[in-house]
Amino acid sequence: MDVLSYWRFSHEKALDSAFNLLQDIARKKDKATIFAKRLKRYASIVAKLRRFEQMKLKNMQDIGGCRAIVANEKKLRQLVRDLRKRSEFKTAQGKIRSKDYIKNPKDDGYRGYHLIGQFSGDNSEKKSIEIQIRTALQHDWATALEIVDLFTGQALKSNRGDAAWKTFFRNISRQFAIMESIHLFDTLTPRQKFETYGEVILNNKSLIEACRDAKQSSEKLSVVDTLQAFAHGLKIVDERLSQVLVTGYALIEVNTKKKQVSVSIFSDDMNAEAEERYIQCEKTAAATDHLVVALVSTTAVGGLKEAYPNYFADSTDFVRHLLLINSLELPKGGGSIWSDFYRRLFRWREK
Image (cartoon, rainbow, N blue to C red):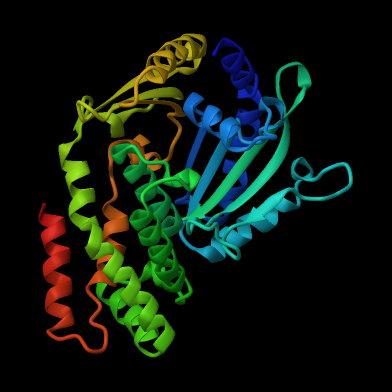
């Protein structure tokens, strides 16, 4: 644990450099961009070492990572284009280390764009830092999957877990991709989203079948009710999180047994204390399966809960779009699509 922690925190300076660069470029494309950064959790590092036989700690490229969440794919592509011009993302041979999971989604349905850059760390030694760029809808999907992992004890993110949940997230990813293919979809009202999405689906037989699969997998798991239960059952110790103004780190501790999340704030001049507390908490978490800890940046635009909704079981935006799918009346069905759509949407908002 001590060796791992030493190596992880040696990425801190490089991570800050990458994060500052990402902020400078992304804000020119989308002023409402949400940013997040983190040093990889102990549990995630160990799981990755075990999952890939040839993986070594020194070769792991995402020990430090930061993320930008933009409104839509057009802005994402603009941001990617500008980042790819930077020398930090080019190897000595001029190649760019990147993965386009939007054009080629992962097997589980994950979509996003990843870049690996080299940034100066301690003693000017270069460290690999991963930058993830996602649209808001892609982030909603990833957040929902992480919430299910966190509160059910699965590892869907590592492609390990219940087959029914795997099927559900793959199916929903395909539907979200269809939504994002609609021009200016993110700017539409809920009713407009429903109409345009429904029009695309109902004009294509294969899309109708794909939508039916998504609806069935959602209903089989009672996903809306399940996610709602996670959110309502979680006690947040400090409700003033949106008022956090200091620059530094936040230590998030989630106890899935007690259904409780607590946050400790550390300003920039308390980094050493934050690191020490984080290591202590991780040692405790490593000995049990109901504690999850993460050390994240407090500089997130919009607050911690907006940048890291998974730790607070907040799947509100995911559910809103899931209801578009669940409420679409497909051929051979009956009843009013509008009455069912708004009944379920307003019921969720009221709760």
